[in-house]
Length: 223
Image (cartoon, rainbow, N blue to C red; front, side, top):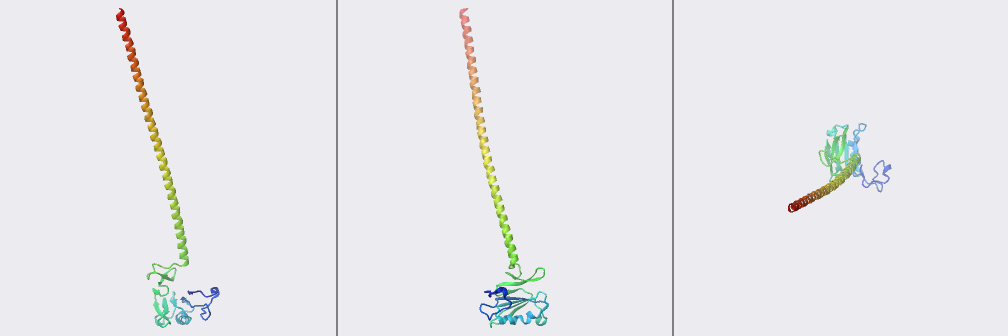
């Protein structure tokens, strides 16, 4: 049952005590039909919950153990307060049926046997999670977040490594350009030195030739 607000000392509560202060009737109650007492939840429970002031009652008979009279047994029954304020049966069948209190659908799903679940849609494609499912989903979400953070850090590390390699390549390219410029400067200096040496050698040869010609001319005059 769903109590809102919860009764005092809820841990020791064994029955609805609406005659006591602070004990409000359930907003919603659920009864699961058993083989041992198959008619109790069909015949007695609705009257008891009506008298207690319960707002909504679900009777779930997963084994279809209830009585056959009145078109039964019924897999799902929904009882709610009618216009006169009495708890009246609004639905009896295999489901789905919409819960007025929750504004969601009661659907029967096969989870190792028939289970009654709440769903946003009548086809049971958007089931409300159980505490275990919610915990598992939260754990999976946390794991996915951690994995996403790990991948983001790995991507950041790769980006930094790529940036480092790019800078290293840029530095190496700059050094190569400087080395090439230095090599070109040296080649140019060597070419200029060779040209200068060739010019000096040519001047020396011309000077020797001039001396020889002068010597010959002197010999011709002396002869």
